[in-house]
Image (cartoon, rainbow, N blue to C red; front, side, top):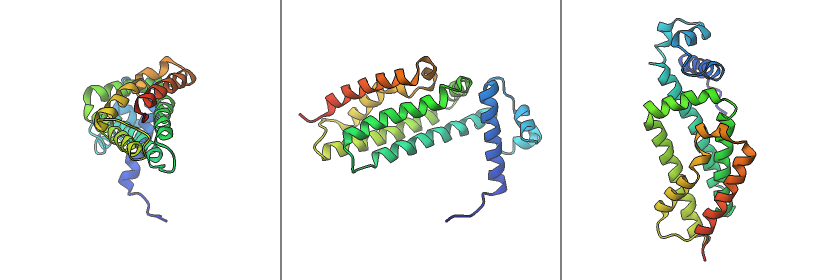
Length: 200
């Protein structure tokens, strides 16, 4: 068991991130200032800049944490090799939706942060996209090896699947529908995807 305590500097960074997340949810990303975050953390603005270069830097760190958590959840599903590839593909789609909806639908002000990240730090979005693409490739390849799936181009099929489920992964769309409504749409998309992948 690892009982090693985090370094004081890392503890401070985590405290800043927690305070920022709370303020972004309550007041919105755009209306939050570094001075306010510093006050929330009981430090000077100058001291806050020792840990983060800007508000965007803080938002990017929060976004990376959310996206990493999501990838870990999806990898856990893909690695359940005792289950069929079809079952795991369905669960990957539904878990993606559930996580995205849970994170953003109830906190619409956080979408301001998403807008900022997408506008200024597309590298973060692209890195996450590549990570999810690799998971889909792994899952499809496993389905082919098991004799479940059939496709001439695994990479292209993974791209097509990612495109088909985009609506279930975009935070800005989450407030549009209830989770139940989104899940019905996702189930329909999964059926179409499996019809195209299943070996005939």
